[in-house]
Image (cartoon, rainbow, N blue to C red):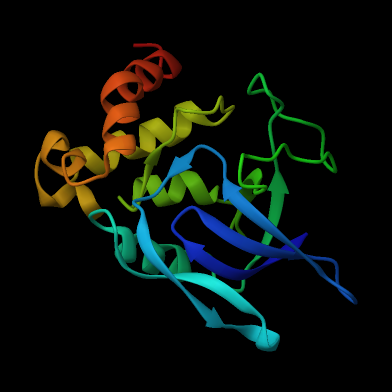
Length: 188
């Protein structure tokens, strides 16, 4: 088990692993893309300096952080991850890292819910199809449900209108592969 130590934005956080001398790991939540935000350094628990979202870089960036904080701040979580083919790894395996050195991992909350799926269901993020994911179908289904019910960012307009408020990178991957990859995962 680990504990959420500090939430940077809607899809990135530090988790503390261990009880007596916990080690901090920078985790990029696998399968989720949350809107980007402007970050600044702040002093957190134990006087450590860390980055935190301070405003919107993309539409709903700060709201996504607030959603993540409300959902997971301080919680005990179970960490799991996939191999490079998107298949679950055995418990205790080391997760792969992205280009920024963040561990790509899923976080199971104390109530048993998957963090990425819950964030997508609440409209605080979307299924990130850039990396393979064993939970893609669940995250995509949660996102589509949020869209259908105008939850979170999806209440601000059509999918096209919401995605148009994101940066070029997000618009590119969403418009070129998101729906295709989600539909494939959902068997459509």
